[in-house]
Amino acid sequence: MVWIAVIFFVAAAALVVMTLIGPRRLFEVAMKQFRDPEAAAKVLMPSDGQFLFRSIAGWVGAVVMALGGCYALSLADGHGDNGASASEVRAATEHVAREIDGVVMSARDSGYDTPEIEGMLIRAGEHSLQVEGTGAGAGFTLTNADGDHPVCLSIDEQDTPPPSVDALPPHTGSRSISPGDIAARSKWVELSASVRAGAC
Image (cartoon, rainbow, N blue to C red; front, top):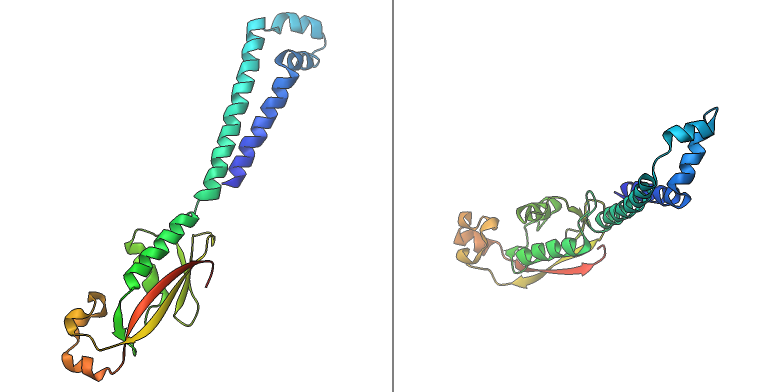
C-alpha cells in the first residue's frame, strides 16, 4: 500500500512542477521540435482560455493526487492489505481472554494450544490474526497478519475443588464425564487469562 502512496505523491509533484512552469511555456518548448517553430505555433497555438483551463486542471489534478497519496498512507498505517490495527488486535485478544477466564479443567489435561486460540479468533470473526505460543502453553502472542501490534495473552492456573458435571463448560466434553471420573481426577484447576501489550 505504501508504494501506491508513493506513486500518487510523485504524480502530484510532477503536476505541480508542470503547472508552475506554465502551459504556455511548455507549449513553446514543444514547438521547438518543428523545423519552423513560429509557423507551427501559429497553426497549433491554443487560446488563452485553453491555457487557463490547463493551469486549473494541473492544480486540481495535483491536489487530487496528493489526497489519494494521503489516503493510501492511512490505509497502510492502520489497516494495510493484511494488517489489523493495534486496537483491533487488542480487542480480539481480550475477547479470547474472556472465553478462557474461569474455565475449570483437570490438571492432567493439556490446557490450550495455538490451534484452539486460533479457533476462538475465527469464531469471533477474526480470520487474519496470527497466534504464536511461547512453548510452555501458558502464553500466546497475537499479532496482525503482518506481525505488527503484538499483544500477550497469559493463562494462569489456580487449584480448585472438583466441580460437578453440570458446572463444567460444554467444550470440555463434560457430558461424557461421569462422577467417578471426576473423583478419579484428583487435581482440578481454574484458569485465569490476562492481556498486556507487547510479545510474551
